[in-house]
Image 1 (cartoon, one colour):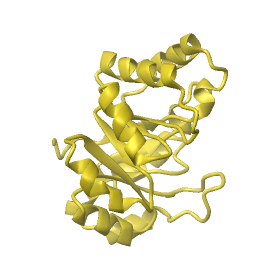
Image 2 (cartoon, rainbow, N blue to C red; image 1 turned 120 degrees about the vertical axis):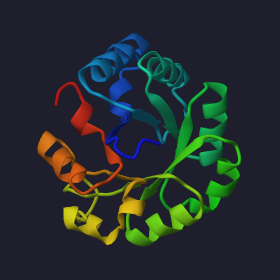
Image 3 (cartoon, rainbow, N blue to C red; image 1 turned 30 degrees about the horizontal axis):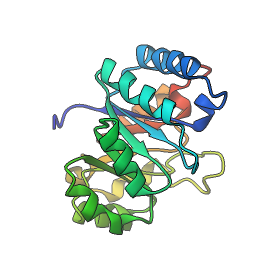
Image 4 (cartoon, rainbow, N blue to C red; image 1 turned 60 degrees about the horizontal axis):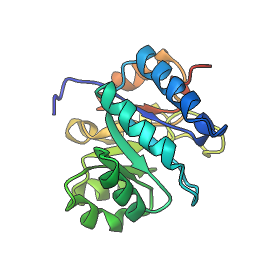
Length: 196
């Protein structure tokens, strides 16, 4: 891992493929991937009816653009199964499901974890997870009170190299303020959207 690299982590919204059109989803992904420098990307979907064509398109598009692909479904075991079937690079575990980490780490895939407070970050690192989103940093719709940029001062530089700030990141100014904190990177949805 290059400790000097500040990475971006694009997380999808099911709204990107709500029309059910694989070609429109591919076109949207290609627009995002060509207009932004992205190192990691995650297809996130909590529906029980899996959008398999979109899952496959996402995996192939990430490979085409040399972006590490992650998947975050309603169950971590399902994320693992889909990741292995479609050759994703890793999975993203939802907050509150840290107990699932050990069995998933043994599978050899990269793992992200969603943390919402410092104690969750410390627990995830102790469990062997190397990529952690901490959120919400800035105000974000339906996400409660933001932690704020100063919250990141709770972490040592060694811990920060595993953290990706998430939540309310919509402009280069917010990205820059996160980068100045010494984090591994930032994660976002709205920041990357073509209509943004």
